[in-house]
Length: 595
Ligand SMILES: Nc1ncnc2c1ncn2[C@@H]1O[C@H](COP(=O)(O)OP(=O)(O)OP(=O)(O)O)[C@@H](O)[C@H]1O
Image (cartoon, rainbow, N blue to C red):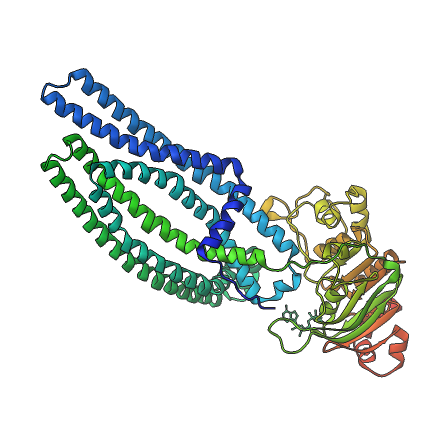
């Protein structure tokens, strides 16, 4: 399941991200470029206004110009400088305050849409989780990189074209010296690409680990256990170790970059000195006026600052970002789990033919050569020890995973060929690891069928069927202390999860042991209720407790991923085997009920 990485070249990356950026915020992209052009021109206008002022003052000192001419020139320079500052503020605000958040938000939505269509089995794959972590970094990098490209073309491009033309008309050698001074620095920056791409690749798994330890220390769901077990020091040590490792990798990369920066600074300094010398000799030889000297000399620092900004800051950050963007694009390029659209016909039931499934990174299959037929109106209970493969089988039978061998046919449709959205239509399920949504009680139930909009009554009746005692809790109460609401007990949450599964309109329903926090007798009561609601549907229940399995039409006994026995409760009890042993061990749980 490992994905082979194809790295796009710099050119390929920019030809993909610019249209993405325009699609995300078309109006703001155009405005950003207009502002950049005006901002670039304003710089050159200031240089020309400076020349004009100094030439007028030198003419005034030779009585060739008057006081009003000097004031007009000063006014022109003040206006140009003010305009430049104003444009600088608007341009920066628009770029970082409007364009950046808008497009990174849209790109996040794009990533979420992609994740919706990716094969759910990928989420069991560590390589994929690393890729996802890296891709998230790419979301911020795309708008940044595009803004730099816009700056290069519309701001720096316009600035250098106008100022370059001006310098060239003064003294061609001046322009050539300035350009030459930056060639070594540009070359040095290209090395950054490799350094930062490698850093990104090495640090993603480490960062994920590091973030997990932080969660184990600080997150609400972990902190109670972490404190009571005294595991703080243990996690803190792991947190510190991964942080140190991460920092040492970053430090090594940054050290290389700092050395390159030194090369850049030396060449810049040499270029600036040569340009100042050329300017000085040209003025002394009478090739340029004092005003031109003053304007160019004053602008020299700015030209070098801007060139430095492009080479060290922007090209540098673009180089770092290209690696991250490549990860984002790589994730977008991953194949979707596609298939044709169709509607399952659950009167045909659900069938598995010789299916097997092995998790990425595991040698032994979790499900091995299983064949099973679930007819319409039938309830099958899957029982077995921990790790026998029950949940994996359920994921295969509901089409969440596709088998690596064999076929699963749901309502007449092969899960390998049908789009997941078609398959999930008509299926409902409650799983072991259900979610506790930080939402109201009503939303916690109705979220399972948001399109149906069945209403409050149905949500309340699903809660009743799941045995949820509301007491003083109202449907509109927020179920999360973090959002100013209340929390519930484990058993109450499990009943809400069951209510959620029952609320969804379905023809095929699965209960994958969401009842661990509920006592065996109460679990049996819920399963009886479930049995009544599942009448006429295809139903699967996974349980360790055989009092609930007994209610099913047939029981499947799994061991090490294989079906070792199958039959009705009575049939299985009548012969020696795993089921009879398990029943003997659990019988006392149900004695009270049977008395
Ligand atoms: N995400 C995963 N990655 C790798 N191996 C997994 C993963 N999930 C489950 N397994 C392995 O697959 C096997 C079957 O697991 P599964 O969860 O299907 O068993 P189960 O019968 O439902 O167990 P339980 O009763 O404890 O819930 C186990 O050996 C388990 O270690």
